[in-house]
Image 1 (spheres, helix red, strand yellow):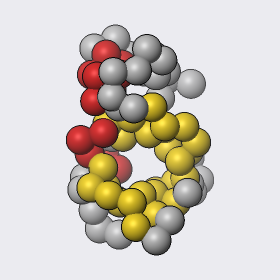
Image 2 (tube, rainbow, N blue to C red):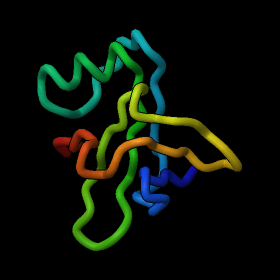
Image 3 (cartoon, rainbow, N blue to C red):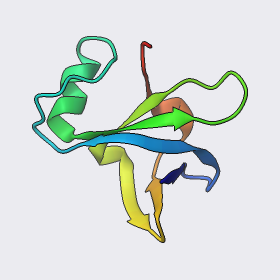
Image 4 (cartoon, helix red, strand yellow):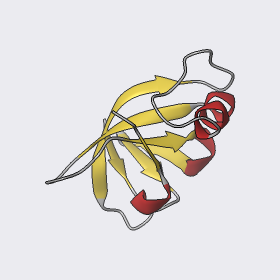
Length: 83
């Protein structure tokens, strides 16, 4: 499912989703990982040359419409995956 940022630009596609309170730790740094586990998160496979995978916290997702995940933040506010 495609993901668009607050400007409506596609930044990638969802590769995984976890609900709030998950025990599945995302591949990111300590502190941020625990925050994401508490809020729930979506892992987004980045698009474009030199793009990295990122995580959107549950509270950064504004909704899902027409098979598109919409964020209310820009890509630069998302959390980078470490691998």
